[in-house]
Amino acid sequence: MSTLLMLARASLWSRRTTVALTVLSVATSFALLLSVERLRSSAKASFEGTISGTDLLIGARGSSVQLLLYAVFRLGEPVPELSWNSYEAITTHPEVAWSVPISLGDSVRGFRVLGSTEEYFKHYRYGARSPLRLRAGRTFEADSDAVLGSEVARALGWSVGDRFPIQHGIDVHADAHDHYMFEVVGVLEPTGTPVDRTVHVSLAGLALAHHEPDEHAGHGHEGHREHAHEEHGEHDHDEQVGARLETVSAVMVGLRSKMGILQMRAWINDRPGESIMAVMPGRAFQQLWSTVGVAERTLRFVGILVALAGVLALVAIILATVSERRREMALLRSIGASPLDVAGLIVGEAVLLALASVSTALVAVYVGGWIGETMLVSRLGLRLSLGALTISDLPWVVAFVATAAVASLVPAAVSYRRTLSDGLLVRT
Image (cartoon, helix red, strand yellow):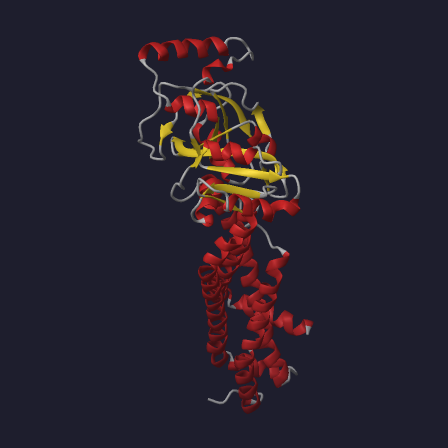
């Protein structure tokens, strides 16, 4: 067997230009299959890891998937607002251990602005319940404080001490609420989630930004805020008096007992008055993924077809060379090789070509994945594992090489019959 593999390697090297083009062609098809599988599995894991440790996500009644996309991923159309009274009723429920209000709808140079409270940094979890960590600065103390996600700070070049207004809506050309300036007081560590592309401000500051003061009040407000910043940490919260949001986009809730999730969900959904709903994030994720399941299966099917096309191209090229190599086969017979050895040589070449194609595809996927991962993190805030070979890739590698070996039995059988008929001399 080792002798046959050495002969197969030498034969391939003698046709290295044709072989190189064949390997690139087949590697492209297998790389597409691997890329589709990586995107499918890692995108699902990344989406599921965006939020963890939150028992219920509460918002105005509507689509649970839309609420999840908007409140957690900052995607899609805005959802109906939840009144502040409903938020307070939820917060004071005896089963609620903590609650985090979320207000969305504004932006800063294309990045979403999220209004919340200090509780957001205490209770928000992602991945394997990892907490948010600061790379620099601190979290909220004054109403005008802002904490940037890592990608926001990188893209805008901002750091602690920089000041900015927010814009109404998500249009980069929208009017700015420039009568109220926020100040960067902290920058978060990268998380690989939409948090990285979010500007976090306090609810009180968000309310003040949306409150248009008269000329006298505005001037006094600016002077008051400048004075507060000069106190080196002594912040006056009197400015938030009379300024409070009337609604929030959603509320993240953690319960005292996991056993009470269904009861709490039923209490919220059946609560009289304002029409609100409670969504279990895990179940909403499953619903979201089932929605895109058809596209996911279609992508996998297309990837498999392309990989099979690559195998067929490899076999077709080997079969095309069988007639051209009849003299080579006769020479092998003359030095003692049997017809079965010649057929084995063809299979060995196919296996070596498949292995070379797989290796090339893995390198291409690794390099392309590294580039693509950086782009996806910067554009969507999602970190996908598109790097080197993983355990989940091995079945595809084995299946691809085995399929190439089985398919190569066709040119091997042709070579076997011709070797028998030709004997030691090539008949023309």
